Amino acid sequence: MTKRSRTERREAARDAAKLAKARMRLAALEAGGSAERPIEVTSASIVEPHASSLPCPACGAPGVRVEEHVAVTVPGDAGEEPRRLRVARVVCPRCGTRRDVFFRIGTTLPS
Image (cartoon, rainbow, N blue to C red; front, side, top):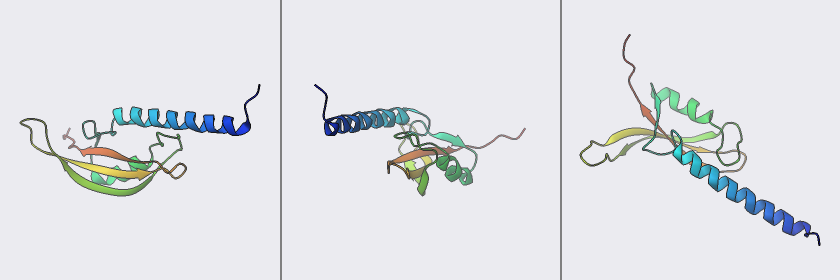
């Protein structure tokens, strides 16, 4: 017996939601996905262009929109000083998924 089209659509929607959730968990483990693994940049002016060039981890749409770029202080581990990070809050124009991308501004050593 064949499935009704509504049943097939609902199954496809559930599968897509599961896949998006798994992709978001994977993106949290990549560089920039959490405060423990920030992306190294040389200047604050690079944060927004870099964040907007990233694809959406949920649907794969190229380029996300940066809604906000803020400086935050993250408490350090036991005995460490707090760290200053930049957070780009981005949203996907296609699926509407929101996420934070973490950056650390490093210094470049002179040659």
